[in-house]
Image (tube, rainbow, N blue to C red; front, side, top):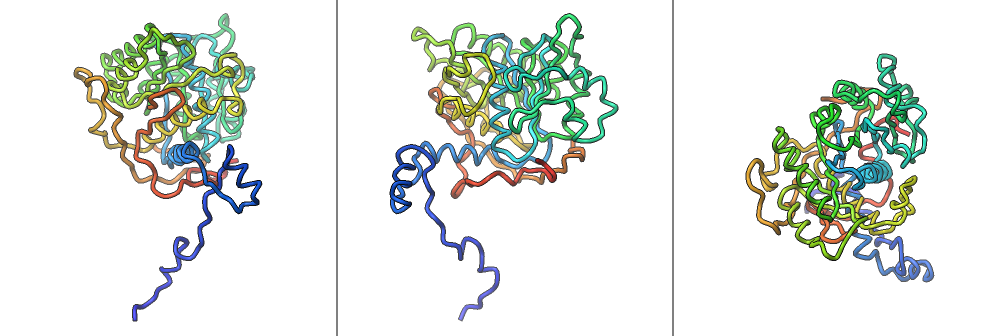
Length: 380
């Protein structure tokens, strides 16, 4: 007779699993009306959404810096930084901050909280006084779970945001936040951009499916290659903001061009709520728009704690790969442990609204409860 051990009494062995319950649409209505007797299960769209949430909750052992940039203004760079920050903060358990590094009175705080009385300039002035998480939050405002650090709003009195100042601010934020998103200024040659690219772990390049929007996004990749940032160009994610579209533009060719040059392409469809230019609320976005930003967040999280280059990604320098190359699958790294908030941390979709995952789908059923694996001790 086989000997039994206590190791056999696992959760998977002895707990009866309940079938997944639909959370939306007619499936949810049928489940509610029948009192749970009829359970059609989640739809394929809902399952895909849960998988994306599962991916973006990947644990993170050290601060990850994300730079959102564009060589052209007016293509939705601040909107992308805003929505990415809101999605990551809503679905993860650790701390996320978005920094407005625009030297020309950026509008990030206007899109999130409307509060810009205290800015990065005051934080720079008082850097030596910061000793705790509570000290940092005196200089930020809160949009849901997302901390927002505004830029100077008075062009007449503001000084240029220099590379050294950006690096000092980033060093401080890295002590208290797991994810730092930088909404950089338009262009690539201002001083703060040098510091942004030096510290960036991930780069998001924002363009549009138009002649000028796509060519400028592609020139951004060219600039990164020409100025010593081939890894950032190779692993970049290009976001195409579809506020302006035309049937005369071959959008498929634009997607193929960027798919051959970078890691992934995400298309954000036109959304009336974002088009107002006012304060952004995730609940008011159309489902396809929310799904696009979920996909973007999952793509960024796929690179968390990644130290070994992925040989399947486009290699630079060198000519771009032929159009039509598919997105390479990602690989996983063992996650690390979250840090205490007051302790220093060490050292694309093919159509708008649809997400083409970069990494392999997670095994098993995605978790549907609140995130916990990446929450630092003592977080709110």
